[in-house]
Amino acid sequence: MESMPILHANQMFTILFDEDFTFAEVRAILDRLLDQNAFDGEVQQHQIEYYIDLDHSSFHVWVREMDVYIHRR
Image (cartoon, rainbow, N blue to C red; front, top):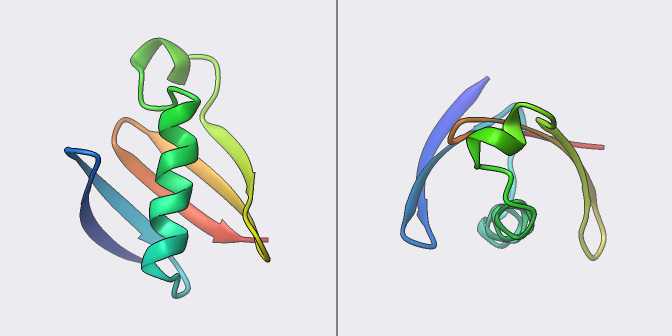
């Protein structure tokens, strides 16, 4: 598993992954997670797992604090 820090929307995230993703895919996933308030501590007490569909791909995503694990489904 690899990890990569990314600055997006003035916040620092660590992306963990087993396969390559485009920068556009990662940004779109982070935008969806931000829209769902996924990085809020109270939200993370109830939900850490997300399914995100983009144009031509689906992703299974786990969030822990500012760490984001992405897996293409």
